[in-house]
Amino acid sequence: MIRTDTMAVGWPDILIRTGQYKWMPPLPVTLGNELTGTIEAIGSEVSNLSRGQRVYLGSRELGFQSGCYTDLKVAPARAVLPLPDEVDLEQAAGLGYFSLAWALLHDAARGGETSALIIGAAGGAGSCLVQIAKQAGMTVIGAVSSDEKAQFARSLGADHCIDYRSEDVARRVLDITNGRGVDLILDPVVGPHFDRSFGMLARWGTVVVYNATGGPPGEGLFASWRATAAKCHGLRYFSMHVYEDDAAGRRRIIRAPLELMAAGKIRTPVARRIALSEVARAHALIESGKALGKILLKP
Ligand SMILES: NC(=O)c1ccc[n+]([C@@H]2O[C@H](COP(=O)([O-])OP(=O)(O)OC[C@H]3O[C@@H](n4cnc5c(N)ncnc54)[C@H](OP(=O)(O)O)[C@@H]3O)[C@@H](O)[C@H]2O)c1
Image (tube, rainbow, N blue to C red; front, side, top):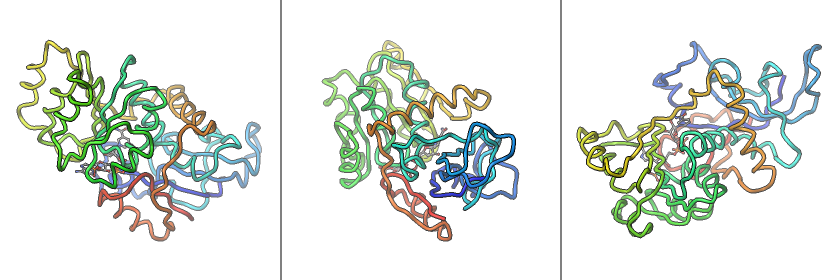
């Protein structure tokens, strides 16, 4: 049994709360997909963990998503990830999105990319992507909606930021890359202008979509894609559920960023700490699109 120190909030929590999640857990459900804390009690047959040990728990290891907005959590021993001394419990609460970022950059992208355009670079996932991409030695361009968000993405390592409300993103990307385009676009928004992505990609470049909060693409998508056939662009739709039956894969994509975190090379940018009793405020903040980084809940 884990005594919770910190819970993290992300878009999947909101999608589950509003019944829009593609992989809905059985209802009724306690929301929440990740927490960190200290082991308070332990089953008699568990030998690899000890009382007082600091751990991370992601709901993906529980068989269905949710159940982590709680001050005490019973979980099977195989589900918890022990934390090294160098990583504090608030930092570790952000590991879920770092594993998403790792998976997007190292599995969904197929290697060899040297530059990336990160849409929503100041958000929860975007702020992890910026850092993991920098750790991979990439040139990072962030697309954001305000000066404040641009400044924040730069503070995490973004080399360039484009304010998509006032600037022509495609033109800026081509300027920045000397006309070559970027190798990778990581996009959780999509929306009616999605087909413009192909005009910003380098030869063999790939767009990886990981949600479509801005709605579906316009009807011209196939024509735009085909028009750049000589650059052989790839289009991939990624979901963490690709690791559903792959426990080794899940371990790999969370342990790699945990090592970076322990070495002080990446950090969970904490946007706000909010009491669990005020979780509605945390959801409203994420839904407003105004949060910079990760929102944490305290029991
Ligand atoms: N595929 C997967 O396995 C997986 C796993 C976890 C999360 N996700 C997805 O990752 C995305 C990011 O989640 P998050 O927790 O990082 O959210 P977040 O903190 O709100 O960040 C999302 C960013 O997207 C930008 N945005 C642009 N248009 C938007 C719109 N119409 N609605 C909402 N945001 C918009 C906003 O930045 P600007 O204001 O700068 O535009 C915002 O900062 C979500 O869509 C979530 O569902 C996918």
